[in-house]
Image (cartoon, rainbow, N blue to C red; front, side, top):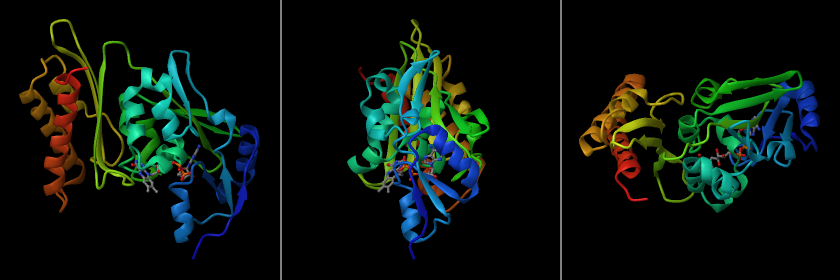
Length: 288
Ligand SMILES: Cc1cc2nc3c(=O)[nH]c(=O)nc-3n(C[C@H](O)[C@H](O)[C@H](O)COP(=O)(O)OP(=O)(O)OC[C@H]3O[C@@H](n4cnc5c(N)ncnc54)[C@H](O)[C@@H]3O)c2cc1C
């Protein structure tokens, strides 16, 4: 049976926060609805109210602010993919956003919804991790800022409390000279959520040595993290295929360390190694 609830659309952020202060425990926030409406249709959504934040202007900016890129939680994947500022200072995020689902999903689905839903396969999460993203959360009583790796506690679990909503996400911009890569494996090309995804940023110095490498892999650990074991293998080395495979193996070891050997490991281990290798080769060996 479909879920039953009262729909409420505030006209300002303060109205939304006042509503949440009164009804937070009985309210589900909705932005694009691409995740939430599936639960509503299946009857899994248990709440008295649905609060629609998709049209709040306060949640829709994309702009540089105090040296960080601020992206409002209600900004859609299509907007992130096309926006000149995200394409310029966070191209790995713009690329990931352009890969989400289908045109319809990208037009409706938002970055805030992607983060709050906290699917291990969420496409924006690895790119946000390599940009050291922080999540800005507001309630009627104040604001807090959390690193994304702390905000997501596990698959589909965050530290968001009743009465709070995500207003925006803050990213360190990609500095000049860095290269980026986003790779994913999905079940089908469109309309499917990635089974695994990789975001990487890298900088090579004048001697051809990797000076900085940032790597995050979706769907291999219970909560988002940077693959520092693999980053350490690469940093201070010259990019070559042998070192790429070494780093890729570190990632698959990390996956097994977190989740143990499972029936899916036989497929996931070579898949994640191949995907990480592909990202590193794209980062350092491809033209442009
Ligand atoms: C067919 C299909 C294909 C898809 N393909 C992909 C894909 O390729 N990659 C991918 O990553 N995802 C994919 N998704 C999942 C989904 O589209 C994304 O996670 C999307 O970004 C969710 O955003 P939304 O605005 O629609 O979230 P909603 O459905 O509105 O909300 C999702 C969750 O986030 C909460 N929420 C929303 N906004 C806020 C806020 N501002 N503050 C606090 N909580 C909030 C809601 O309460 C809910 O729990 C797909 C979904 C479908 C149905």
